[in-house]
Image 1 (spheres, rainbow, N blue to C red):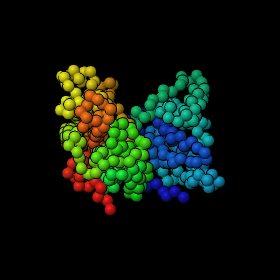
Image 2 (image 1 turned 180 degrees about the vertical axis):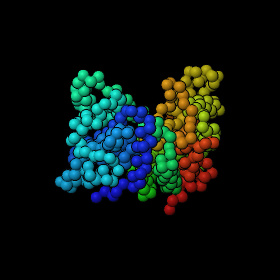
Image 3 (image 1 turned 90 degrees about the vertical axis):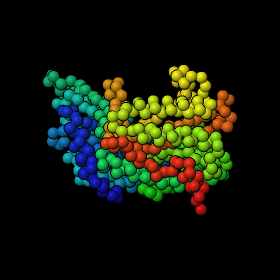
Image 4 (image 1 turned 120 degrees about the vertical axis):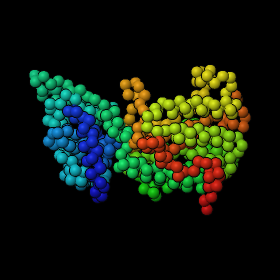
Length: 440
C-alpha cells in the first residue's frame, strides 16, 4: 500500500496557476513511458516531471487533462485496480483512489482514453501536448485527434492546433515559488552534505567507485529517492573529460578529484561540483588553476541579480577564463584574436550554467523570440566555470597537464541579488584542506 500523497493542495495550486495561461486551450500531459524490462528485471521508474509537477502522481500509463472553466476541469486516466498485477508490480491507486487522494475532478481507466478524450476535447481549437516523449501516448493522441476531426463533420472544426506543453509548463516551472524552493533547498542541502562526506572519505588509494558509494549512501540516508543525473567522480586526468562516468579508477596521491553529483528530493535536483586534492593538499600548480577558477565563480555569483541577462554570465565566464588561460601560459598572442578564433574553447568548452529544478537541465526558455531574457527573482540555475587541460596537451606548461577544475554551485535569484543554495559544501582552499581525508 502506498502512503497517501502529502500536501495535495500544492498540486491543486499549481494546476490553478497554469489554468490562467491556457486562454481557452486544453492541456494534456502523459506519464513517462514504463521502463523496459531487461532479462525479467524491472528498473526503477521515474515519473515525467510535468506530470508530477501537476499531480504528484507517480504511476505509468496515465494522462492528466486540464480544461479551464469546464466541468470536469481536471481529468485523469490511470490504470485500473488489478490485485493480481499489484502482487507482481506493486500498488495501484486506480480511478477511485486517484480521484480521492490526488483531488482530481474525474478519473477514468486508461482504456477509456481514446473515447473519453474525444468527448472532452470537442470544441477546442488548441491543445497543449508534448510529442516525441512517449511513443505509445503519441499513438493514442493521434487516434484521438483523428476521431475528433471525424466527429466534427461539417461543423467548421478541423484538426486542432497542437502547441508544445513543455515550453508552456517550462515557464511556470522556471519561476520557483516557496513550495518549489522548499524542495529545491532540501535537494541542495542533501547534495552538499554528501559532498562533505565524500571529501572526508577521500584519501590516496581509494577507488572512485568507493567515493561514489559514499555519495549514494548519504543521498539515500538523508531522504533522496535517487540521483538527479549520473555520478561524475573523476580523479587525475579523468577530470578533463566533462562527462566522465566510468568511476572505476584509483585516486592517486598528488592528483585532484572532481566530483559532480546531485541528489534528487521530491523530484527537485541539486547539482554540485567540487574539485579537491586526493591527499588533502593542493600543489602549487593545482592551487594556481583552482584559485583562478574560484575567483571567477565567486565574482559571477556576486554579479547575479534581477535584470541581468543569462548570456552576460556566459560571456563574463568566457572572458575571465580566457584571461586566466593567458596568465597560466595556456594561450599566447592577442586575447581578442584568441577569442575570435575560439581558442579558449579548448580549455573551457561548456557554458557557465543552466536552469535547475525538477530536471537537472531544467525547462524554461533562454531566449524569448530569439532575444535573450533577463533573469528574474525565483529563477534557479547553476554557476559552474571550469578549466580543463588535457594530459597530452604538448602546448600547455608541463606542470598543468592533466589538471581539470570545475566549481559549481546552485543559486536562486532574489529581489536584490541571489542566494547560494549549496554554500555548505566547502570550496575555499583552507576549508578543503582541513576536511579532506578526515573520516575515521
